[in-house]
Image 1 (spheres, rainbow, N blue to C red):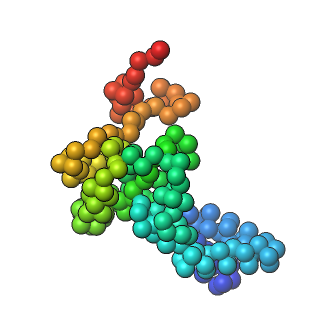
Image 2: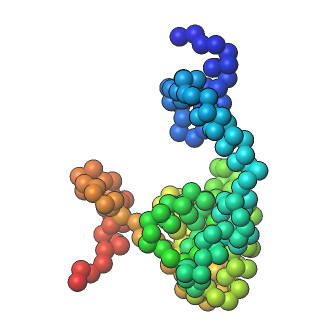
Image 3: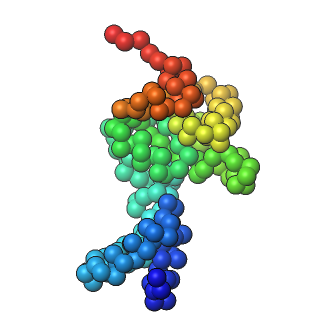
Length: 199
């Protein structure tokens, strides 16, 4: 199907977003085209203002509209526990779970020689400085369960070990509602390794 050049430009722009292919980009473009002007205007303004309204938190390096961010300013959070994640999206996922009440630190990626992400690209010096600050007693390494995430966790572990804080890693295993028959052997193995006693 042949489309007008302005539609093609929008489809091409939308395809640059992660997880958006030709079909999804085309569907979004036609949705935008058929949406009321107020919806299109609101979307356009939100996208245009995003980069100027968002800053990095000076303490945890999360994306926020105020620095320090709301999590770092929250007096109900436990300042003795620090959860280290790769990216802001990881922080959001963990915080959404409601199971972690400490503070966070965003490394800015994971070690990946293929992607030119070495130790100098991560915020290791800032992390060490934060841990040396005094209040932190436990650092929870919450990197992704990938080769890059594992390498990053081990690197951070070696950097922080001399600082004398408790270092833990989040457990991995079977997702809630998952069927064993469809799980890969690594996931099943991790589930067995991370088992705990039932009371």
